Length: 144
Image (cartoon, rainbow, N blue to C red; front, side, top):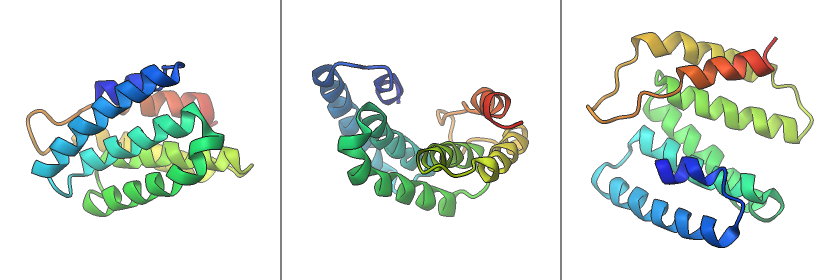
């Protein structure tokens, strides 16, 4: 997870490729022992998003559909998971901006995620708990 998140700040493609190759290896190992895990689907979607953010012209057409598909799968598996809702909404906001569309519908999704965070309990001890602070940032900076 750390390798994927840090990938958003890497500017050198050689460094990014090395980091993302290591990250996808760990992710694939995790997926082999935990199938249909919404948290891993989120992480995989973020892995592809790093590449789209790095070079949208090169990777956008190839990976955008995969990102959307992974978020849909995660949402089916865990419709009340605030991280699924948050990450999907943030991806949808970026897509809407790219195509010159309103982000307002996705602000409602972010608000829903914020409402779900306080009562949401991860399924396992080491599952992620992040997201509420990010959701509040998105609302503050994008949704008036």
